[in-house]
Image 1 (cartoon, rainbow over the protein chains, first blue to last red):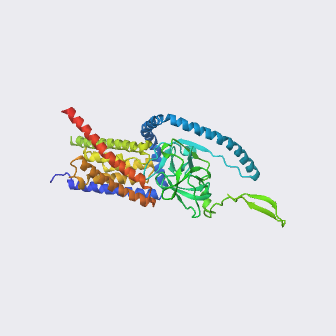
Image 2 (spheres, rainbow over the protein chains, first blue to last red; image 1 turned 180 degrees about the horizontal axis):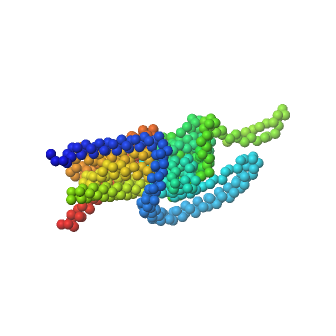
Image 3 (spheres, rainbow over the protein chains, first blue to last red; image 1 turned 45 degrees about the vertical axis):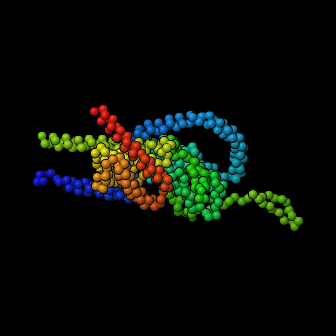
Length: 311
Length: 174
């Protein structure tokens, strides 16, 4: 043991120290990541840009195999699917004729009320590079970045509805935080019971409803849309439907299947109003629309008699 | 002459670690892409922890702490989770796998499985609590249970497959 070689105990000690140093480094990284430094964000986006093609190349074969398996599975139920689609088509045709007349009426009413015209959205569509999976994070990387005018905070949608919003932008890639992620909170509006609330992800399939008034009575199956409160997200984007659990608690079931995301669109003209908080007074519950009145004429005393239509 | 040996020794070490890095990077990407299958829609099993454990216990191939840190760091960037959480998990897996506690226990596959369960659960619980502290809220537990369950089911399957490959190899040699 007099040789110049370092003893085994010394090597073990130095390895242990190095391990401890790495664990300490990791904890520092966790802390730095949480305080959201610009430098960390830039490092992340740089590496995302760099690793995106490699990740895409690794994911592609598995994605294709999964697609083929799904096709084979669906081929076994083609007949049932055909019958279902035919009935669906019939229903949509009936709805379509109704919608056309209602749309015309709506247009005329908007003209009469001088409603401000809606801004047309500029949309940039990118391909989802990574899988959204993960029990601690639910994000997707898309292959469009700063070069297409994407900025942090812009909303992401798919053909089914609201997907999430951009949290990090690189030169060639952007990261979208999905609504099901635990860090995602979006202002929503219950379209039938007319109440605003906030939907928070919980890294599962459903979204928790928060800040809902105690007076509110959500309806099972009612559609939930973005309310646009706070000015960060545009209003009226489909988020999902209300789902009542066995315990009686209400959740939102997202309309988007996050595991089948292939293309994601980013609304790039959404104003990033950072000064919106200056005059912000907090959320006010939306008023239920006043029930329509019908004039029945004058009563015996000469005053006009008004009756309200009951539900 | 001695200088050449040293250079060869370092080159050998570097190439070994580089191959580990590529292999583990492939495994971690494969693990993430499993979520495209409807079976793993809720959560994907942690293949990386199974592979690291088998590498250390069965194949006597010990990836360095730095390689594990690097793989975890890359994984955090790819999936967009908090930087540093996956490296901690991988470092803990190695730490508990190499640890003296289970050194004399691994005599058969069943004990291997018990040893892996303890290693995985302890490492996962630590990382899970770090995440709870980071997010200040408890996530939905069904994906977490699914993740733990599928990982513990997959371990004996992969372990037996490797045993079978070794058996065939020995058979062919004999």
